Image 1: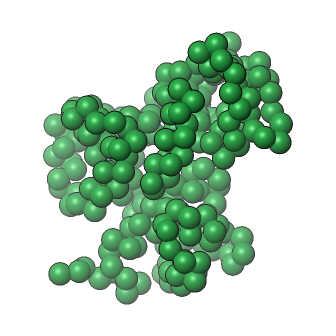
Image 2 (image 1 turned 180 degrees about the horizontal axis):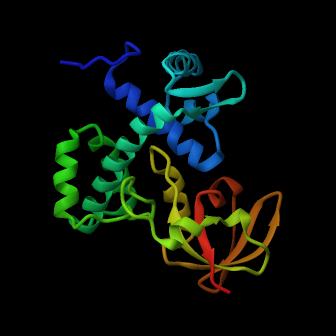
Length: 224
C-alpha cells in the first residue's frame, strides 16, 4: 500500500524532492527548476507542480524563476533522509567493500526504509560521523575539519588544500567525475589558477582543470 502525505503525492516522491533541494542547496545555495529537472529526471512542468505544492505546505521557500530553499520544517524531513542515505553508504563501503559511486546509488534505493532499521545499523557500525565521501551524517558530532572546510573555489592561488568532503547528487555523477581526477577525501591539491574553464589544480604531480560545477562540490581545508 502506498502511504500518502500532506501534498497528495507518495511519501517517496516527497522525500525525493526534499532530498534533491537539500543536495542542490548544499552545492549552489538554492535549487532552480532546471537543476531539479536534471537531478530528478522529470519534466519541468512536473517539477513546477510539485514545488508549488511543497511551498504551499511550508516545506520549501520558493520564488518562481529564481529557486527553492528548504524551510525549517522541510529541512527536518530532508535531514532524516540524508541521515539514512549516508548511514547506508557507510555500511555498503566499509562493511561490504563496495565501490563508493555504486554505493551512493544503492543507498538512494535504501533511504526510504524505516528509521528503526537505520538506527540499529548506525549503532552496529559504531556511530560513524561521516559517509565515505566525507559528508556529515546529520545528528553526529562534526569534526573541526568539516566545520572549517570550504569549496575549492574559495581558496587563493597557490593554496595547498586537503580534501575533507565531496558533495553528491542523486545519481552520483558529480562524485564519479571528481573521482576520475584521482580526488578523494584525504587527497592533497594545489590550486594553480582560475579561468573561464574552471579551476586548474595539481594533484599527484599532474595538472588538471576542473569545471566550476565540480570544484564547488570539493570541500577542503588549507594546509600551507
